[in-house]
Length: 68
Image (tube, rainbow, N blue to C red; front, side):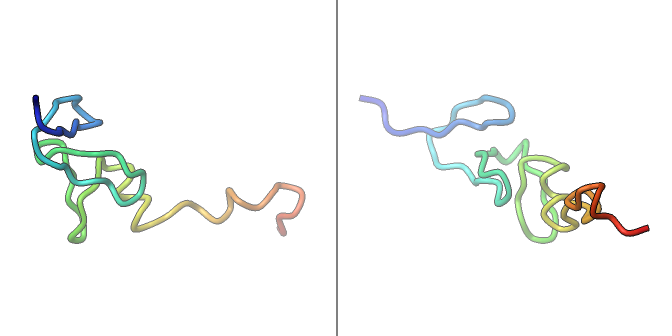
């Protein structure tokens, strides 16, 4: 009976050990696909950027409520 395995959700390769999860989107990521920023491991540049810099506050405010 095969043991438990974990698959990289970026490249799709299966591994016989547990993989790291992206702290932002919680996708599993292998060492070769991982993006390292600020001591954290992410699934890609988009998650790494969003984790540290977030989204623009202007996008959350509806256009009718914006002050000019």
